[in-house]
Image 1 (tube, helix red, strand yellow):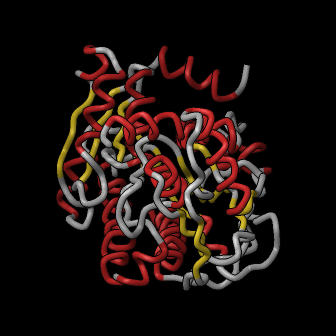
Image 2 (cartoon, helix red, strand yellow):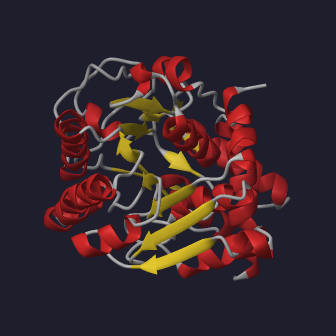
Image 3 (cartoon, one colour):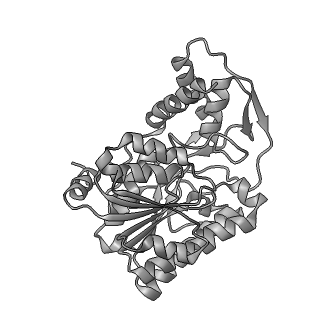
Length: 345
């Protein structure tokens, strides 16, 4: 039995009360769904700036009526400290996912990124400290590695941030460490590597590459690849991220607390390889699908060339074991998006 399987058994025997910020977003909604299916009590906080009410409605269809009764939702903004304090009241563990993602978005709107990702983050730390939260688990990002050329990425070796988004996540890690040392708040940061899965938004200028390409291929639209297609990423299915959050929240090793962990698969895939894999899966779902045209565009400012996680620390100290690698995760992801895109076309 894996560490995660043991953890799930423990949670069913002894339910906890959790706060998930960004609960209506992509990752947050998967955390809420998993916790409710484990019969936990969950408070969700979201301002719907990037999250969606449809995500919450989707969760409701996937849990029992009794499980849904254990969910309480607060519509509010982490930029407001009083909202954070109200959300933390009565909860034991915080899974902090609320943020403005996207490197290009941060370059276009650095002040908005700072307000949400730094001011909002500190508000959540402060609220957690005042309320007496047992542990604060938060989403960091592989973007903090910046211009460090070494692969795979190891937690204690980072470069210079290349975007306001990367800088905001690095600042979060610094403040989490300060709150741990100064106030004794237990924190664990998770550096996500290119998370993907169902419910990820395929629309808008800041949509992530996988849902954007799935939508383009399904509709026969042009696929845009920034650079030469040899840029590589460690694409991590959302179920792996859910696992990491729960393991981090209840880790009982002192060496695991008050540090950050890479959360990925340890593998890297080029954008050209990613495109071919998505195309292959969609053609199997829709025989006769004509591959759409591909346009290679200029590299984007702030993008790193290669990214790959060393997950040794998470494996050793958290018991983290990826359950899904790229194709494992793309199969259900493409199917989920494909059904909705075709049905809505």
